[in-house]
Length: 177
Length: 193
Image 1 (cartoon, each protein chain N blue to C red):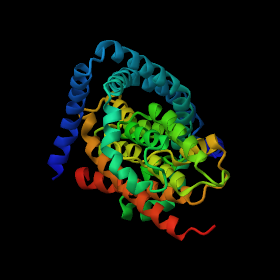
Image 2 (image 1 turned 45 degrees about the vertical axis):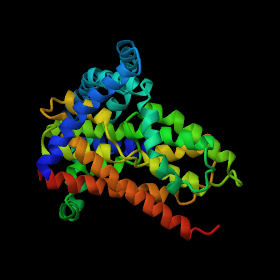
Image 3 (image 1 turned 60 degrees about the vertical axis):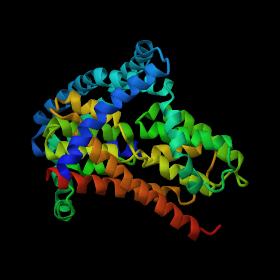
């Protein structure tokens, strides 16, 4: 089961790339030109991330190097460990619903610190992919049309976040724990 | 919100470092982290450019449209209040399809367009309709087939197998989506004006 999932993960990406290229060619898309136009956007996106990354990585580095992170997470260590969530990834889990760029920076930091192929690195990647930025989406989408009373949208979004992060932890443990 | 969080991280860390004698280590960490951030972003450029280039082809080849058509039957179940063939239907389906393919940037304008149309159908413009809540729920947890940025970051960090997380991410987002739809249904039936 686990081996099949890992194989499918790798194969899915290649098959997806192949499918896109073949479909584009069959539909008469100018594939190379179109690719370049999209790639240009990728460059801009990565560069636009720099200030967010600097802001977050500096804050996290300060937290870690000063020892404050250890102090703050100490009381949570036990209960979280029983649930399978490593305390190192708690900041990521907490930031995920608040900000996409902040949680992205936290995930990138986990990849650097623990290695992308470690359990923590893989779990962090899955957590980052598992949910979207609930508060940002809520603010932007409802804000754009002037809805002020958002009913039950926030609790539903947050429940989905908890479920997504929980599932990410569980699956990562199952596969790589 | 994030403002307070960021400030307390920095002020707390710097304050503690001054009293527990770790100022040197923290100074070093500050410098290293800011340099690391730029390195990281530049390391992302290649992979992000590749994926977004590929996604542009997918869009122009009509794959987003095709996926939207596949998802159409599900739409009736999720949004019973949206009239059949309404322009909100197209925008919502395209937004979800873009999300599934990890096209965050392309998804947002489509989502805002869908929101506008849903607002025109809204009898109480200050309050969200059930359809809006369902749409938001789907957006905050959408099933993801290609987590573009995560793949790019893993490759940039030197992973020997960046794609191993694709299957797990799909399953985790599927779980989140099922929970979101169930919670949305539950809240909707219990909600009193």
